[in-house]
Image 1 (tube, rainbow, N blue to C red):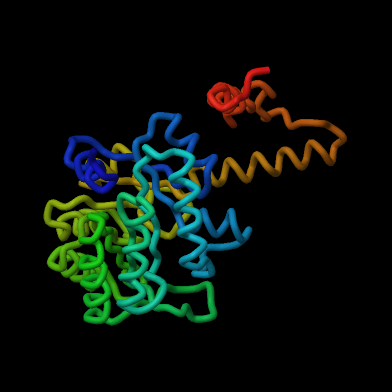
Image 2: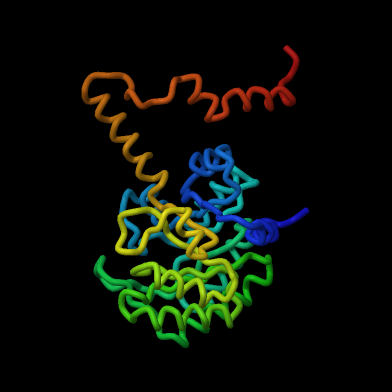
Length: 288
């Protein structure tokens, strides 16, 4: 039986662009798999929104992310999850602990980035580690990944502060150190996208394709043309979900029982698995 990392490697070896919805909990994972997606990104920004009701500013802990990984895996065991490992939650030894834990929990891949931790007390900017210090953190991640076979996605956030040349050099270093998937955060234009893809030297490149950020945001079709293999959408489900909650609250305030956009009761019950529960429970129900 193939492991999740082996299955993801096989999927990425197939032709075609991989659209990877961003998930955060059991229901988002279950619905993603039911919709026919084979992969999903366990997004730190989505987990922060769901668990904290707050922004993606490095406030989520390793334990909370691992708990969210457990939730998403349990709700859709066949879904291949690329899990956000942020900066590894500390130094190179913390990175190894994070990678090993994600591997044991069944993630197919883990993201490790070069942002400095702890974060400066501002929401602005993304200061990054020195080049050689990040090399050591990635080297630690790649070594730890051998235990489970989990794929390592290496991300650089240095483009806004240090420029595209430094970012491309980091991607080249990531490739040399054995990263499986490469991720340039915040490319300014299509030329920078092409440079990042070229630096990945044939290994899969990952892009954020939700609109609204200070970055080049191509369509799925254009991302594929630029050479990206994977695209994720951090606000793709989260934003409509929040809009749905707001609509439900507005309906209650207006004296209604349900919003116009709500699922019919029977469809909600089916989605949540009430009938499935009853069917499976029959095997353990005493006669009479």
